[in-house]
Image (tube, rainbow, N blue to C red):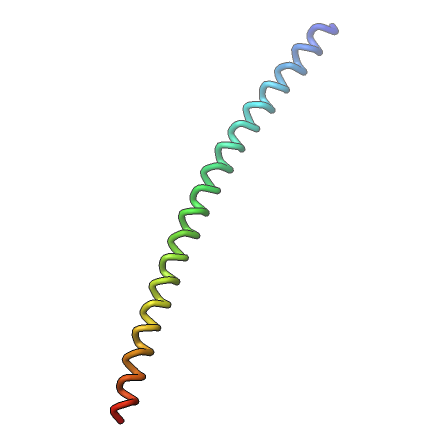
Length: 66
């Protein structure tokens, strides 16, 4: 009887370990996707800032002529 309880506990431990491994993999994937999204957003923000800066330069030139 004790042996079967030990076997049951070992089986549960194996299942838990497997679930943990899956969760860790899932976390890694989500974290990687998050990093990619963050990097893309940063690039877009930088491009917008560059665009705005160029537009401001153009506006200043136009205002000087007026």
